Amino acid sequence: MKTLLFSLLTVLGVAFGNAGVAITDLLGSVSPELSVTYSDLSTHRGVATREDSVAFSALVGVPVEGAHISVGVDLHDVDGDTEKDWSVAYARPVEIFGQSLGARIHLQRIDSSHGGWEEVGLALTYSHDIADLTTTVWHEADSSGPYGVEIMVSRDFATPVASLTITPFAAAHIADEYDGVEAGIAATYKLDNGLSLFLKGAYNDNDLDSSSAYSLEHDWSVGAGVSFKF
Image (spheres, rainbow, N blue to C red):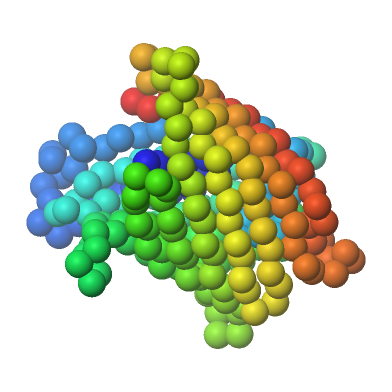
């Protein structure tokens, strides 16, 4: 299952060099992806980050010695201004107590309309026939920054329409400054030429004071986009 594909944020891509990998092999493995998305409300870790934005995203990734390194950039057009998010990530399979998991560490910049920050995090994903479960521990990248845990459950369902996948999901956000929830559904339709169309709708809420720009009070969000994988 493709946990978190429905996030509509192409912020995980991939890199250009690692020990033991020849440049010819690296270039041969590069899998760039471009996308354009619209969202009436963007969120991150259960808080509001921007409204009514169009994002132009670039993603590139490569396998490296049993792992995957990624780099991605999102340029958000918000009322004529540009906000840039970026992420660098390293992912690989691991085994813990006999269970096979997907592990991922990341460094991410979120250029929110309400103020930007850097984030470091570690995520573990357990894939089961019933659902995928991903737990992410994160911390803002300064000594006094907040920290928290995101727990997300999702499942991909095939449909009678060929190449159309429906993904319901739910997430709980537990941080030292707030708690929040998100639940919704996403749809992805893949065409044979490398194009994918996607749509997401979600319910969002947190317990921040309503005067906070990051507050979400029973808000609904809708996003849609198209991506092309080379």
